[in-house]
Length: 197
View 1 (cartoon, helix red, strand yellow):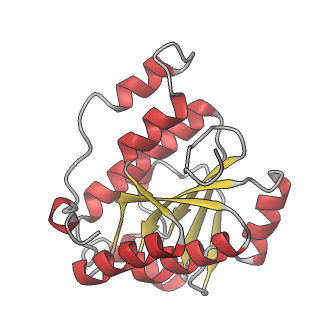
View 2 (view 1 turned 120 degrees about the vertical axis):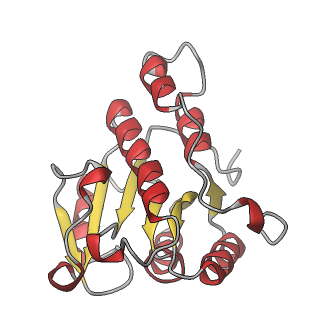
View 3 (view 1 turned 90 degrees about the horizontal axis):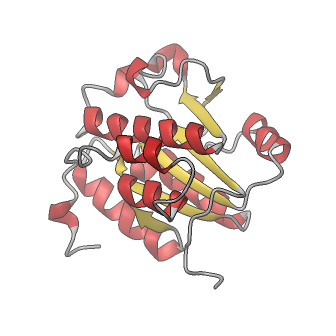
């Protein structure tokens, strides 16, 4: 069954990349992308999947936006594009080196791409949540997602991740996850990409 991209709660980590205040006016579908990432964070908390949060140069780009609901998380400041700073590497090691990463945030062609490549080189399975990832340019977003798929990452959606993690309506946390699915994920402009991906 190796290589099919099945998501399981065990050995999984949620990576929240650089959803900061200064990006708000420039990232296409920013509000909806953050809304989807917030649902992923709520679900992972319910299911016991640890989250890791980064901020790109917070002194200049500001803090993580409040609506993500991550104010209780330690934000790892960085200047490199990859999330895998020495601090984050240490946190991953402390979590027992998870085998699978659920990745969301911005920007697709920069920090999401560099993080994905680093995770893949570590031998991790990477699930890029396409409706929780964006860029300033939709061209960059399209080609970044396409490129990440070529490199071996799995492209998925917020709802698909939530359902894969519980797998059964009899799951003890299904009712809580079901509440997060009460409304479809907001539009993030992915349908127009479909034929290209």
